[in-house]
Length: 224
Image (tube, rainbow, N blue to C red):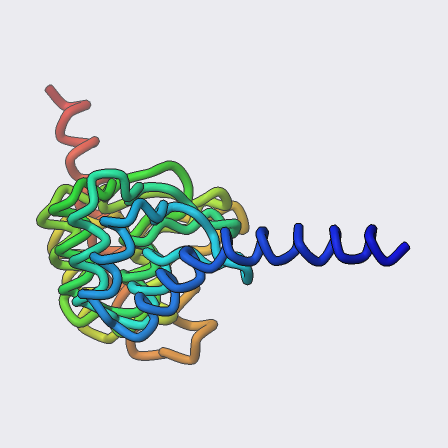
């Protein structure tokens, strides 16, 4: 019985020893210790592996705005920048919702996808503090009217949750204010539900204006 117990302890110790390097990598990312991150990567630690708490170094670095650690992680060719977490979010989406422009820029430079099916980084940027992330993503080719699984667009997110300057930015970039989601809600409805009455009125004005222009163009085409 004692031998079996000792054997089990020995196996547990080996398992912990093997798990320690990735735990150290995630902690180094959390503490923004770029040198320690680089050292562990050079020792062969897999940056895509989860630690004992299920956390991955790249997500932790982005979430904590640990830019030095992020640079070290992105310098490793094996780091997977488009791998999603359990919630279906990519590192770029996390950077977007946190309004971390430097992190977003570094990720895109490394190959992070600006567009994806369902919720996109632009949706996330429009729901957070932004800090220029939305404009950057649009400049990088983000789909302006991307639809989530329930039909929500970035403009709808901006109307309810984002900074007040995001709605004009998206409209200027060509966002469609008349679009509705699965619940038949437009960006104006999102603004109204968020208590943003002035924005809701302005969006309704833009919707009416664009609809009149569309009707006029249709009528003009029919006359030819």
